[in-house]
Image 1: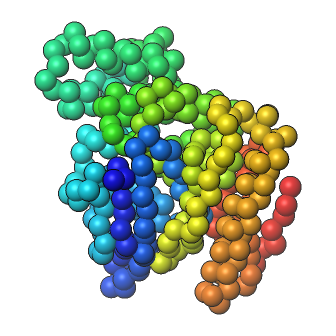
Image 2 (image 1 turned 180 degrees about the vertical axis):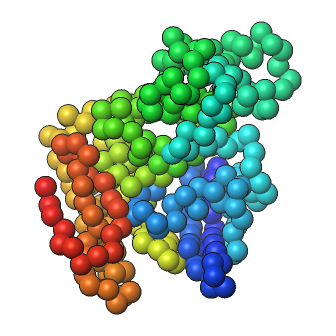
Length: 294
């Protein structure tokens, strides 16, 4: 049995008296210890998908299952790393992580909790910043606190909702390696939401595109058969990486352009912008502006 399953999941929202179908017919199965990346356009419903799995939202149709049981709300079996860090500004690094540990591991004594908290803070290389508050940290350091907090809860599934998209390219690349390194130690089941194709190849075992919304659904999966650890510099000369990257990009461009034509708008490809050499990110863009390739 898969650890995480979504069966024919659909979700709608009502705004101004009109119902918009965001997700439809979502079928997904993730095995224990697997690292899966969902990649797609901005506005396609990726965050909605994470919220359904985390239990912050509930589907209008279909079901979300953890070990065969329906998700009925948030739980300690799912740790979430958000894009915006979600740290309490008046608490230190230690205290932000402790808050989650106190909630999930309430039966532990003070000494056990302290060792556990320090272990995960050290794991993300933040021991020197133990007593600093979020305002005293860089964006990359704040996100490391978020990673430490999620991992310290010892969840069965780690959900990451575009956790690195707000960071500069250098910090983003460093944290990609750190998250994968941490994941490799305990092989927690991981689901990454991203709009960066290269990021998904570097980090995941499987890549599954999410088509543009509304009525977004999952496309065909692409398996990443590239040996770990994956170094960005090495991948640039890897023929398997180039082939996979082109396949994913071509699929996203095709479904993106088809959706825009179906909407009756002028043909426009997704906005492809390099964050750093060899990296491309996706943003869905509705305009008559021509796309430039770099």
